[in-house]
Length: 304
Ligand SMILES: *[C@@H]1O[C@H](CO)[C@@H](O)[C@H](O)[C@H]1NC(C)=O
Image 1 (tube, protein in one colour):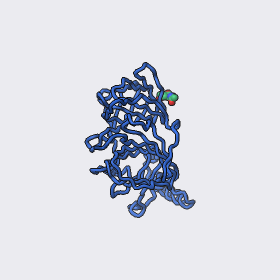
Image 2 (cartoon, rainbow, N blue to C red):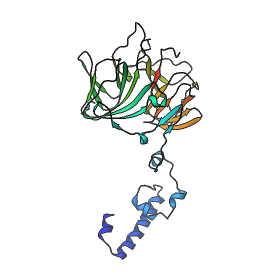
Image 3 (cartoon, rainbow, N blue to C red):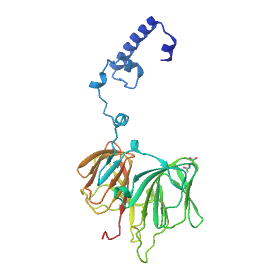
Image 4 (cartoon, rainbow, N blue to C red):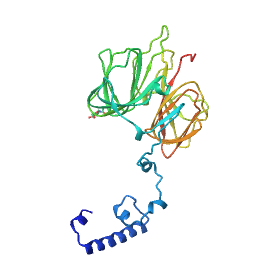
C-alpha cells in the first residue's frame, strides 16, 4: 500500500485496482477468503457487510458501546472489555479493578490486581481476611514469620485477619484477590496457608460430574472457601442451584452458558460473575476445551 501513495499516476492506479480485484477473486476461489486481507476489502462492493455480518465475539467487543457486562440486583456479569483499573489505595505500583463490592450487596470484595515493576501490597483493614490467587506472573509473599514464598501461576495464599504480610513483584503479575471482614468464632482461629491448585485432591461430588477442588480447609474456623471447578465440554451442573451462599466467580479457562436468574449468558475465559444469595444459577460448558472456574463461597456460619 505504501507503493500507492508514492505513485500518483491515474493509469497506474487503475491497473493496480484491477489487479487487486483479480487477486481478491482468485484467493476466494480457493476457499480461503480472508476477511482481514486489505486486498479483499478493497474489492468488496459497497455495503457488503450488511449481508455478511460477523458474529464472532471478538468482533462484537469492538462495536462501539457494546459490552456483554450486565448488572442486576441479584447478579452481575463483568466482562474484560468493561474492566476499569485505577491505582489501588496504599499499594505501590499496582492497579486494581474491583469486580464485586458491598455496593452490589456482597459481603466481600473481589478484585483483579495488576502488579508492575517494584510493586508492593498494603495490608487489608483490621479484621479483614485476604485470599490471593496468581492468574499470570509471579510474586514473592513475605509472611509474619519472616519467611518468603514464591507464588507462581495457579498458586494462592490465605492471609488470616490481622496477619502481617507483604506481596512484592518485580515483573508484571495479575492476581485475583478476595477480602472479607472475618466472622470470628469463639475458640477458633484460621491459619496462614500457601498452596497451589494442582496439589489439592479431587473431592467427591455426588450426583455431579464436574471435578472439584477446594483451596481452603473445610473446618469451622474458615468462613469462606474457594472452589476450583472443572467441566469438560458438554458437562453441566445437575442441580439447578438456589442457595443462601454468595459467589464471586472468575472463569479461568473455557467457555459456556451461565444461567443467572431468568437470563442465560454466553461466557468465556476472563469473565467474572457476582451471584447474590438465592439467585438461580446453573452452568453448562461448551466449546472445545475444559472450563475451569474459581469460585468464592461463604460457608460455616449460621445465616441468622
Ligand atoms: C517471575 O517473574 C519474573 C519477572 O516477570 C520472571 O523473570 C521470572 O522468570 C518469573 N519466575 C517464575 C518462576 O515464573
